[in-house]
Image 1 (cartoon, one colour):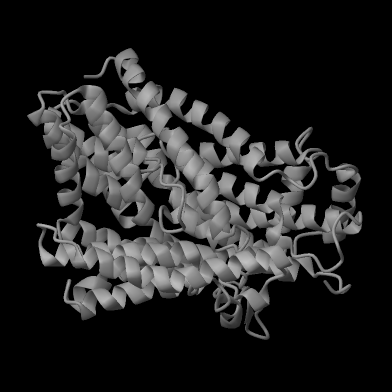
Image 2: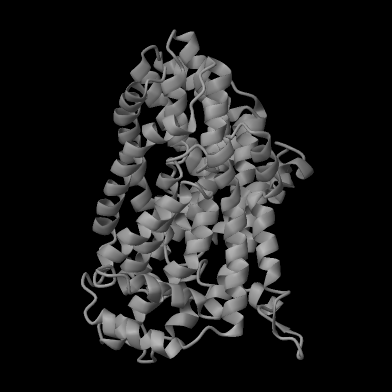
Length: 529
């Protein structure tokens, strides 16, 4: 490692996600592992696809081809044999080449509002990072009494903020608005490590364990907090609607919160403990942080015009994201005004409008210089946008070809499910597995309609199994495509895919256990079913 001092801010300012081995600072052992992992993927992906296609399965050819290609793409994603977005694009191209669906139908999900949420939010984040607003927010959070002295407290406090916000704002929007502050906090900690001589001069700030813990807390905390209210996450509304349609039972806003609160609280506590154990921060106590923060805040001085404009764009965007949640609390999710507001203030449209303000608010009107220019915006992580677009495509095709339904029904038949516990366990496992390769919204939309008839056929009230599938749909933690928030934090370049998989497996298992044990109990306590 050379002795050149790392420019921490520049290193964290985008463009660090999909790096080749030559672009990373690896130890000899890490380099051997990475070369082996990527080489294995190049051969394993096509081998698994061909083996699956050769199996004598009694399912429609389109489902078998889709299944084989999806397995191959998952191998490419996990091994990073090619950059992760390219792995998804290879799968999408082969879906069309092998005739699973028409090109226009396959590519249509790239127009999803979630994709535009990413574009707008990433542009806003770029402005916050460029003009120092994220750093200002980070210093403000670190200066809170008792918080900034310990990396553990910083991560937990950040997780609490994320959870509470995501209960009323969409998970994607919550993570998008907090990502710049998280990067700002990481930048402060990294510079503190650098100034104290606790890291080598040329260290890579994107490979710090404290950064991985902070980013994963942001993504996973939003997933957990999103369960707290019916409007916290799209799967909640989908599951609640399908349950009402099937059983005639309406789950009120208050009933949902009473049922979900203990589950969220337990999951968050486990999240904090396990994340900090798996990604143990380089330092526990941040000595002298009060003095350091005070000095750095003094250097920032007053708000610049660019910071003020960025803050205006940010506040407008966040306010419009929050507004439908406020209407839901006041008027209810069944009201006409909520339907109108939530449809008009689509989060993707709001994100794009908010980002557009950065190109309209001037820094110098005389010079026609605006808050952000296109060359800045072009630096956002387009790879993550492409990656999530391909994830949505696979989710849509799982539903459209009937492969998800085939998997669900054949598994249920093979397992001979008949008891409430067995059907609920199957619902949780199926929802998590499907959510790992598609968005949580797609997982709920696919799995809940499969589980309800299985429960009815077995003579079991479908309320608990369907609710379990709804909750579990938000508990896909392993891959960047599992949830939009996973994709957003992966796009920061601070969380290696292997770290996300290792942490994600732990929470998939723990989340499933919590839902299985606590959900039936809370349904009974609240008096549902």
